[in-house]
Image (cartoon, rainbow, N blue to C red; front, side, top):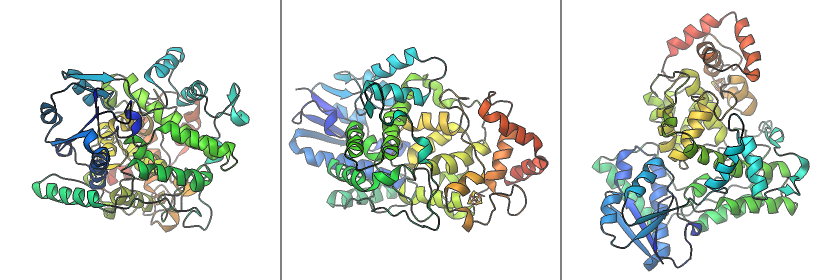
Length: 490
Ligand code: SF4
């Protein structure tokens, strides 16, 4: 049986054809020289790779080297590898002798599934349509030919603000991994690398995300049993003292390849059919995996290689150092300060702080989308080129002018106020645009629309907002104030 080379994001058993198949694992130090990763992300990747090597024992050849090329020089036999997850890695493996490249694994749908769907799709490619196709094709939450419950999306039931007067959601905490000797070695090694001059961002801290399949499956089981029921209604909510809410905290496990997304999808469906979790929560979780995750994966390959450089809103401002370096203490705006501190301390915040606090702030100020892709990739434990390119360029920054999203995800402080407990403890007022208490999100929203209205394609969803913009009497003041704020932390 040919030796299977597993990249560090292909670590689960579903990347092998047989549980006894010989394996090649490579740890390249150059990866950490090329990018300034979050310290906890570097820890997680190294810990996961080394745990897998230890689990496989003699079945695996584990090579630690400066580069992949140097490691491969030590391997004489032919190897095969599943389709890697970045364009750079894919081109690299295709250029190698003695390496056979196999189709991708680790997603619900295959490249042929997506091609078949995209071939019949008319107009822009929309996640909702792909999601329906994928559910039918893979018989997920189906009742005959239609969706269970009669509707494909129950999103409207999954947009509850956090319960009033609660600092934390009443849900059992997710099980946290216990660090072991491998983690201690990784921590010591990263300390050594830092002394040698390799830079990281963010704070070190206890490992909070699974590095082994056993840890990931334990977290999945716990989520399905205890946390899934409340996941749906509060999936968009934000609480200053509860960063996890009822989220699964499994995105890094799917993206490291420790879990097969289909096992989570089937588990969630079973929870619904057994009466253990309500349909809106189950459908919301399934949509994140079968819908969003697979959709952005396929778009990464479907769009042209230069897609990541799209910048059709003409965003030219470099990402400022305070943001890039996760200097949350420099920020006074409560929401942004807390979310940036979450990234600094955990390398993770859930999708709404990413989209509506971090991404929204950057979009409003015209920060360069390609720099943001890189930042999200480096700073998040679940960040990879394939997931961040489309999510940041297409969805968060609208830099492709709607090739995968119907409108820019820009909003003022009112959205953050409705969906969080941040505004009560903030020096700004979400209702004010100007003056000492003028909320940077509210002011930034109108300044963004004024700056980009001629570039945003006409769209029924935007028409009413643009009418409101025309009626603002203090717009000049808002724009001047935003100009004065510039790239300073709010
Ligand atoms: Fe954020 Fe504005 Fe609310 Fe302050 S007032 S927390 S800056 S949205």
